[in-house]
Amino acid sequence: MRHRHHRLRASIEASSIRAGRRRIWTAATSLLSVLLLMSCVARAQFSGPALGASTPVNRSLTPTTDQAILFPPSREIRLGAGDLIAIHVYGETDFSPSVRVSMDGTIQLPLIGTVAVDSLSLHEASRLIAQRLVSAGMYRNPQVTIQLIESPNQLVTVTGELHGIVPITGQRRLFDVLSAAGGLPPTASHVIMINRPGVDQTIVIDMGTDPAKSNMANVPVFARDTIVIPRVGVVYVLGAFKTQGAIPIVQNSPLTLMQVASLSGGTGFEGKYNDLRLIRTVGTDRKVVRVDIKRVINGKDPDPVLQADDIVFLPNDAMKSAIKSGGLGTLLGLASILIIAIRP
Image (cartoon, rainbow, N blue to C red; front, side, top):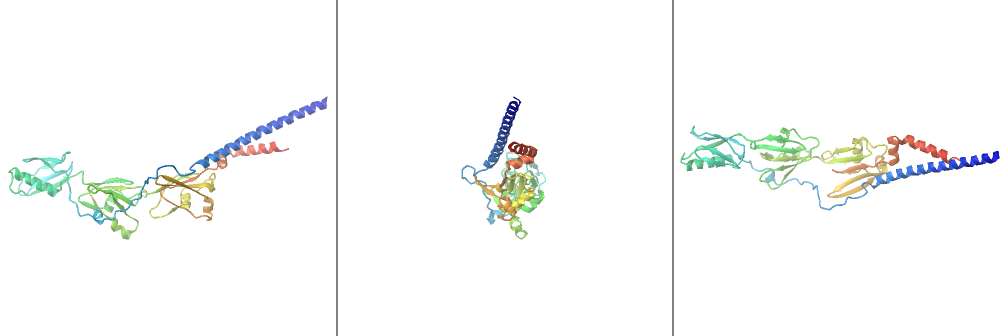
């Protein structure tokens, strides 16, 4: 009777152990399935070119080469709303008013009333006022001169990566205006644009980096010009790098994958080194190229040269991420349980 009781108890314990092993195995299988699913999700990201129209966008700028546009003749100062002017008649002290151009582009003068001077040069406005004085019977042959005392219009606006408003009378050179605005920051492109009233097309200037050719880029700048300073191209770093963000491309200097990895602090332990993705957008089409960064580091594959707006994405390995995030104890504990569970 006692032996039968021991056999029954041993059978129950064996059944309990087998049930425990099955539960452990089920839990381990579930955990591995989750990790596999995480890996598949990571792999699914950026799996191919983006859908979209093939209409080109972000077209590269073509520098202006027309010398008549780049180096036009000197321009006369033209009057506009807000200008304060002093009017003089040679040899006469009774007629010397100082007036401000109103918002509708007119001035009010003694003896002759309203005179429209908007967009007129100083010489054109002088002749018009002289004609009005003669027509009013005030003078026979007046010699009228106009002096510009104050003007909100004789300015050059600098916008983009560099911001500023630079007063200017007549004309100044481009480099002088940029220096007066504070100088180009490191993030500024050396290809800039000038929007000029009266010129239909945008003037594109490539300042380059060769001092011997700088004179060709130092073009005249006139009042009411708007200088647009674009941002230099950047490469975006995402994923398992020590530092993520945008890395500017130095002017006229190639930027390679190894340089980007170095500037971003290097790759993290959790990265899938054999599955780095270079994502490049051409127009609205996105191309994805997979690179084994370890082979590049070891010199077995060439070091890719990156372009502006490229995205360098290094996915996370699910198992490595779990270890890095503090799951090492859990994984080791699970491994120990599995070893004990399958031990005969």
